[in-house]
Length: 398
Image 1 (cartoon, rainbow, N blue to C red):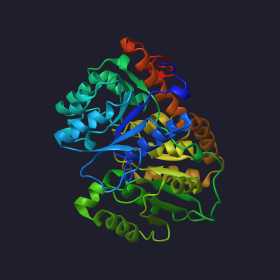
Image 2: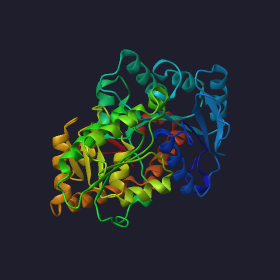
Image 3: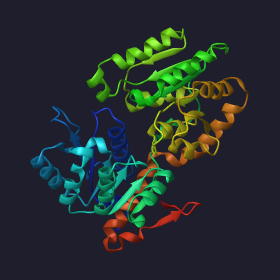
Image 4: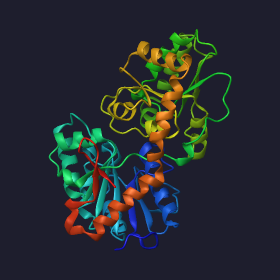
């Protein structure tokens, strides 16, 4: 099959999907949208939406809603996917049915066409079953995508997988994030965004701002996002109310602001571009992919982040500052430098901007198109996918 925009293969996407509020849903909608824009048509880009129960409404591109745990539904989902030329699945243990999301294996066995799996999590210390599932996923897939070199090294070093089937394609970001900061307010804005839960590290961030009250003008810390649905289901508003109480106890009502919305793409882009600094105070030491981090860099924002793996990789060139986990003093020190020392934030923003241009969704979508076309055109040579090498010898599409 010739890889032209007029004659590109049809693709079925498997993931959670809007209106579901989660990072994988947003990722899939963005990737699919970028492919459609490049092709000039949405035709042939269908979606199988992973759901816990049938939704009353769905976007036109959703060809089937697969109810996790339903064997008949799984067969119907596979049938819908097999009408395409290729499939792109998103993988996170928690979005598929069964223990550790093992139902993805049943689905992949039923799919008879070239399949690409994008891994959003690669654990350094998985349980034996998690390791077995991930190794089987890579075995069944025709191609596997990870979104950082850290994930690539971890997967090929710690798991029994065919390294020739694994490639790095970065997480994408909206090109509209690029550009100058929108209307600056009198007070600098530090922004954290995304679904809120205990792993976000917001307690540490709030404590850090207690040490910055002497700065003039007084910074604003905006926490944007609704409570994660799983946290909401288990605790209601208790977690969010606890964060508000912490800010109140520290006398930060005039510093810390909570915006509980899960914004659509355009509104989120506008909010990010109005910020001066992006703050990622995450708790996890495992995180090899962060869509928020990619968005911050694509927007040319200086970043302060805990030293989780993706941040270490992305910020090592000078686009931001790394701080130890759960260390409010170190976090406050890095924020103070950005807020008070002339030139520090400017230098970081310049580095972030130079990196950001490589992360725009159209660039990322073309790399996925290349993988799909190669697998379809040369199925007998799956182990010979066209790649280029990073300086440390790791594979990347291109």
